[in-house]
Amino acid sequence: MYTLRSRLALLVLLALLPGLMLILLTSRLQREEMMRDAVYETRQLSQYVVNFQEHFTSNTQVFLANLATTYTLEAFTGDSCYEILSDLMARNPEYANIGIIVPDGIITCSGLSASPNVDVTDRSYFQEIMRTGEFVVGPYLVSRVIGKPTFIYTYPVTNESGDID
Image (cartoon, rainbow, N blue to C red; front, top):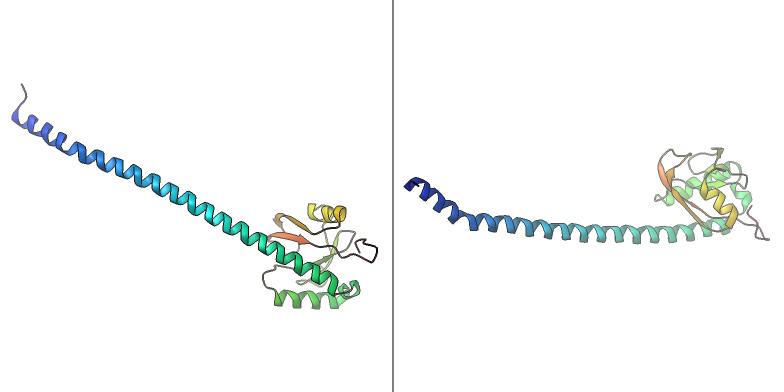
């Protein structure tokens, strides 16, 4: 009923079956290990990004606090404002822009433009700083001054009575 040829073919298939099973099992184990490695590396990278962003935010808060207490509000008017901020940007290239927002929500000066006159009253970071009077990290958004996605950091400049000037 079965020929010699068909019996030999069946014998060869049976002999190859353990090897094929081993290859499939090894492939599956390698895939699982690669997935575990990818998850671990992704978590490591995510933690690095979080640590970097926290460090950058902390440094930015200190930078803005120093800026708010070093210069008088009069320094941030006219051409002197642009000169101060553009000089600060040249010495701090990690910032895409540094600007002054007056209490009515208009950016009156920036390191990129002497008089951008951009209204940000509708932006959440402006509303929050006016409400809290504290350092605010805004959402990741497209800046109206530079036209690029960025994080917005704001720090209030206050007068002697603690009101935002």
